Picture (spheres, rainbow over the protein chains, first blue to last red):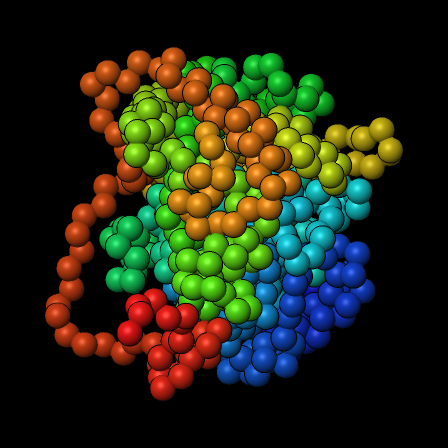
Length: 475
Length: 91
């Protein structure tokens, strides 16, 4: 079995026994990337020699010693590009520092390897908004890998990465993990430092792992979690060993089904797979309880006010002055800003900046932004009330399996509506994971993965991972 | 929404074609987000962050930062250890 196809825990055993060297894994991955990436397009770039040098000095006694990790192209790795899938930064930026998650991965012995494609500045749900390359779903090349961390999920699913980091602002880890049939974990807000992640919506963004299995997700979370003086929103809380008790099972656990997540709009074939997983968890000893998250119908609208508002502020840094694209021969500074941004940004990024600027503008702030923040409070309260009745919440990740490439291309609102099951977790700051739970067949004869979403309370990752592990064992 | 006006506030130049496309798309999105006016938010406090964020102060001591040369390497134009921009003030 090629090393590129094996899990972190399997490779670690061979590394510590001395049967293999870290460079063997990198060679195996490079071979897999050369054969598959021209079709799948998960990677924008990679530097094998640099990774090999770093692997030579990796401490193999550490939990991730010698393991290469693919990095979504919106996290800074010193000396590497960081394009965010945008023409604005392509060929015009080299990271002068490591993001905190990268420093932490290195401390755990891991080796960052390769830059994974993504929707431009993490805005999108199919990776088709990348200005720099096309990524397809490894299970069906006519379909999208999901997004925005589509490259990270496709890399793991196509066995061209052992594991990857993604970022999740409204579902951007869980949704592509679901479409690609891999595990994707969005940690609670504040669990993982955002320092060195190119900010999209700062109150919603979290970095998390995309892996082949739940145990690997726990290993990765162990490495990247914890308080960081460089991110004042990271929380000063102890980091447990998330691999401990992973096989404890779900006996006696109360798992809630929100009625709003199983209503109209969900593809019956997807629903059937999710319900099969729920029945499996029930026979494994969990108690299934009905719950309600009554403000669910307002989540998409709330998100598409708050996220663009924060984005319009965060992306003002891309002005053509300090780094990135600068237009030739500007008339003056204003012209420099306006045309550098026109050239550098793709349509979805422009749309969201304009929308965000509008909802924050004088006269509209109270009607849109301030009201959305209040509805956000109600959505948080929905979850607080729900977790008084259950330990974790079960739902689909998306209403349907991976869409065809090009579907809804000119209808952004239609794309936004498909985020309905994932975005509330970001608004509430809770943790969530997508675990493969079956497949559905398409008319063209392909078989597409379906994910089960498990949502846990804020900082409840340890229990969440145990439920996820139990769900994984069913499939 | 007047797309061209707001784009100018956001410092983005738009072609006429892009402006027209965005106008229709953004009108649809704004029509949708206006569903929030149905929600009774009387007496509800706004949430800016998902977890409480407090000022975190550290000792006022210097610590290593990024090197000037590393940062200037990314600048589109630089000279004399500084980033060069078009003239902003007339002499």
